Image (cartoon, rainbow, N blue to C red; front, side, top):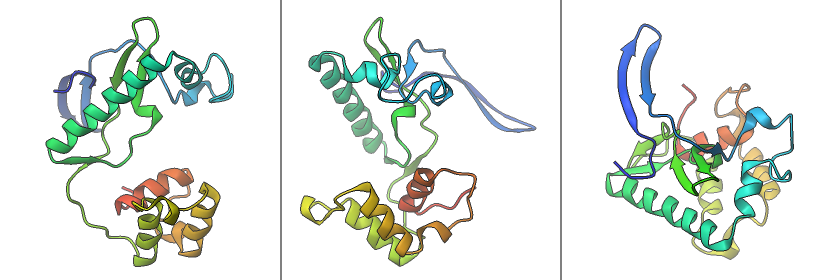
Length: 175
């Protein structure tokens, strides 16, 4: 187990489905969507992501280093991150401790694209090793994605657009 990963205490099947019990971890989720009505994300001093961005550079770089080390560990175990975002990160501002949680959307590598070929090329360009070949903005990416039929791949009106993008890039269908 990697030291920044939240500790799994128990797991079991229940009539409602699979259940996992994790150790309680101190800290604030960097994507605290339950607070977005109270204060705007990224802009308010109470927002955890704002607070993290305003830590001294050495603490921010240490946090980034721990995230990189975790994903290197994950890759060594043969998995890739599909849906890693700020909601998977908890930061304890009292102790400067990072905890990674919500890792249910990692896949065994390699995985095969099963989405439409047109969307594959849009996604590939977005992560091109040549910086100048990538999209210049999220808006440009979304425009290309929509032109390639990106929102009709899966009828997932209940999911936000970025969730659909993540699933389509991963070649997954909504379950």
